[in-house]
Amino acid sequence: MDPRPDHRTDHRTEIRGFLASRRAKITPEQAGLPTSGRRRVPGLRREEVAVLAGVSTEWYTRLEKGHISGVSEDVLAAVAQALQLDEDERTYLFDLARAARPAARTPSRRKDVAVPPRIQWLLDSMTLSSAFVRNGRQDVIAHNALARALHSPVFDSPTTDKHGRPNIARYIFLDPGARDFFVDWDAATVATTALLRAEAGREPHDRVLRELIGELSTLSPEFRSQWAVHDVRIRHEGAKRLRHPEVGELDLWYQSLDLPLSRRAVHDLTVYTAEPGSTSEERLRLLASLGATRSRATEPDQLR
Image (cartoon, rainbow, N blue to C red; front, side, top):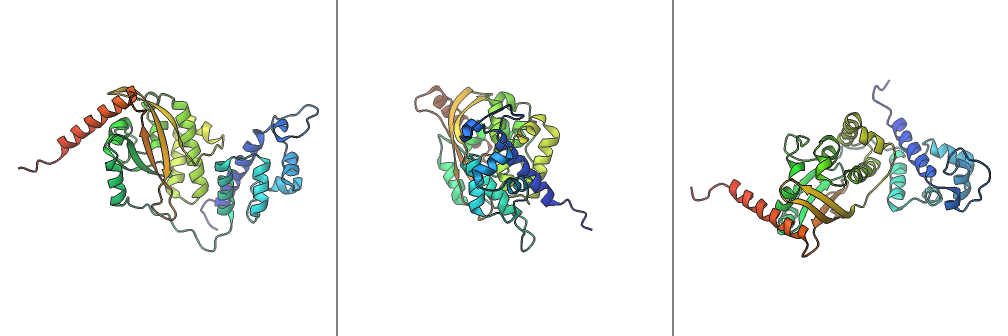
């Protein structure tokens, strides 16, 4: 008997939780359905989703119980439309279906890839923007000088690994200082959990990712609460306010761009910028200057 945990059971739990949570978010009025009488729950009933998707109630009930293997893409698309999934949620649903299909062989362990020198050159050329590369687990695997200066609380946190590599999710949920550094810490927890949820759908066999999720679930009640919501996010951009220990508050705009470093692993390039002429831009320039000064101070003396 195989002593290892049954991945299929765990996967069915993910599917069940996701579909049930999306169904609970839609009211009959939003779905264009007539309402009559009292309802025990505010969201749609399973039979109502089945009608909207054009399938039987029995079939949809089986799907929501996690039996997604073998379901056609057309039917999944109909369910996604019935549940009014956004683009990220739809992608996540299809990722869950793909992961549930029987594999011809045991999935190979995903290997981390090194950042090519040309990517580091690109980062270093961006002197007035904070830029870093992260993987789907939220590890920062490359950065420029300003990213190191701007995110110094993250890099200097005891939550970094033995190689000094930060993990954004671990910092947000396990370092008390994150509540001060991220002015809107609650929004940061929501976005970070949703990003990890999307990565778990893409890479259900990633042992390191599952260990990270287990660690956060054990040590952070806030993470457990957010994880239970089943929100998903793939694209990540918007306004961000940081409270830096040296220069004070900065109102920044960040944009994440897909960075294809390998066929399997997901990476993105995240860039933080400030509005030209603003106080935040002045403070970014100050951080850039401080970062450059410290970098020169740590370089070996070439004249000795």
